[in-house]
Image (cartoon, rainbow, N blue to C red; front, side, top):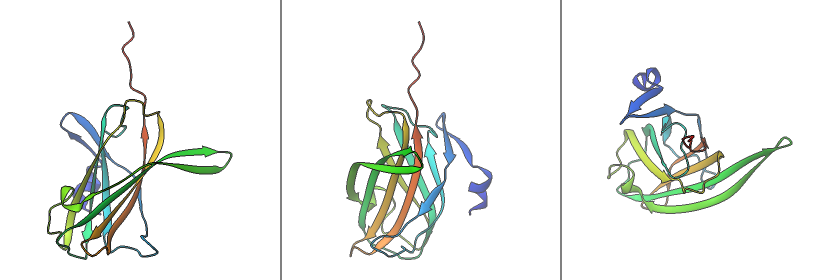
Length: 157
């Protein structure tokens, strides 16, 4: 892990709190992509309905790419009686170059993803699976991030 990011697990960015959050690397079609994630930051660390969740994924990329596809799957996560259920909410595919510098180089890179939370988003646990593929469809990265949405605090009159 990058020592600078290890020491700064909580950062103040633009007046909002960002935090390093747990993540897991995953496979795409049975293949573990060559990208090795070091840190995932979430700003703010507890998104609220109507707000924006900004994810920054930092890691080591082994496979350069000219361009590619950036795919996100968002799930609502429920735990009940020892069982976990993930309800798919939205799948989106965009140009990889909207989320990182292209061409994608070898070495340390940063990938950014912003997600606007609808005002009707219920508080609870969510998971986003982030997949990046190169221009030929070969997987570059797969990271799963769990996070919580909290209720907006309304002023009491």
